[in-house]
Image (cartoon, rainbow, N blue to C red; front, side, top):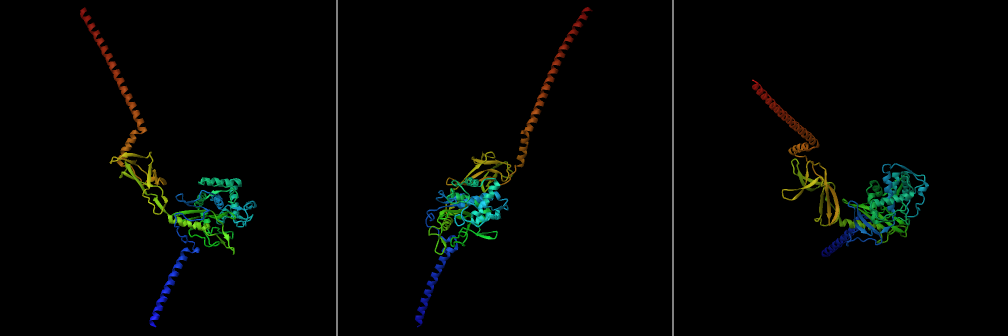
Length: 503
């Protein structure tokens, strides 16, 4: 009986241990891969070199710090300019009213005409009516959350009125602005991004527009909000990366700002957001994604493999596992050391970087081949032969701290990663003794000294001429006197001889 109980106890222990292990594994699985967590880790790093996303979309990852596209999938292919058009419009509006955000806008009937239907998901509305009054700041914040046509269009009219242009000309200004920031294939025919209106852009161009939006803190923060209360009415974001409210399971922890929208009621879905990874920022753009569907209970969902929000997560996770951020130099770092002539207490000068240079590299990349090309200002820096018989760069004291002496370029694999002006790291005065002799030298060879010396030389010359002339006159007088005396003497002799003859 005791033996039986002992075996039974062992069996129970084994069963309990197995159940415990299974429970632990299930718990870990749900913690890492659960859809409701919103963590980037809910998508494992892709085994292949390239991320797997919906094949019909267009996508890019852009790093604004270095101006680098670290991922490009059909980034130059044309697409409808939907919500990105509104983003461009808001940038222009914000720049014009940034110092007068309290300007009051009264909504007119014409502001709400020809802006789409409220029932069309491609033309979102928040219910603004003619006669409503808002501050520019209020409408901008509401627009950044909702991307609603009835919030943006009154702002466009206010912009046109202030600049004295026609509404039809606003789209031209949008196109001109896009070109000014480097967009190569973005054209706007109307400002609200409605489908079939002639607007066109690319994923790369949208990323550049997002970067400009990102640099305007007020706009960026407003677009990162999950909701905004406009005169008592709560407006919720349409970007499911930022909120679980409408379509749970699509949010992404760390995603901040930007938009989600579509060009048509049936599709051309686009998502753009930014994610920070330490010092790095990634702007992720997915264009021409599939439209969501509705199940029998009216709940929204995306077909498997066609969810643009999942594609954004995949791309962010891929970038985080592939790239690292490297500082090539920091502001103030010593870059070079050159000879210093006539300096007090030192014969060398440290040259430092004016600004930080950083880049994105593949994790594990060898940067030992990094080349630093230095070009000095030949008006200030020259070459001399050093004690070792070689040519060295040199500068003459005095030197002022922060004085620009040249430029450094950081080059990797033949590509210029970044450049920075080179500055003198210290103030260096001229040596006192050398400075004294230099002062004397300057005095002697200054224009004033040259003038004085010229005058003195002229005076000396005149004096010499005077002396020569005076001496000549004296000689001539003496000669004449001698001649006269000789004649007088001769006459006296002749007179004396006559007298003696008469006697």
